[in-house]
Image (cartoon, rainbow, N blue to C red; front, side, top):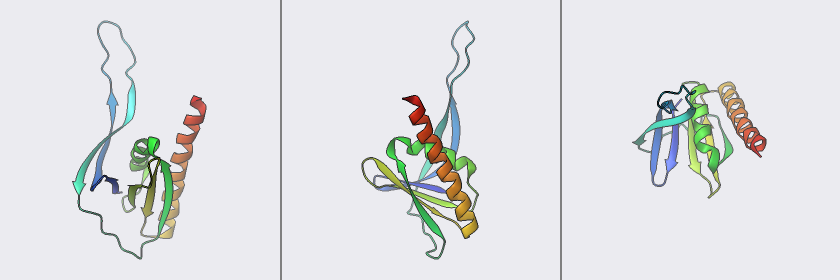
Length: 126
């Protein structure tokens, strides 16, 4: 499930996704707040892909790309490859590669569900 993110002139491979928790303070007990989108990445050479692999593209809002990547990282199959590149100032292009059309369609369904969930949360916040 390698996910690669293009950041300026470098490619980053997402290695791990983890939850950030704020520590509770003092004498009062409070629920800790969890923000489930911390990432660990490493700088790598541009990914080499087989041109015959089935692929598809999606567009993600730049303000939601980190949440999208972390949620996608947790649900993708191991043999699916995802490239995330800036498209313009407000959007990122997500290209998904899979070894078969069935796995590609499954990954697309998962990615679209995450995008829809992020849009619904935005609409609900207004």
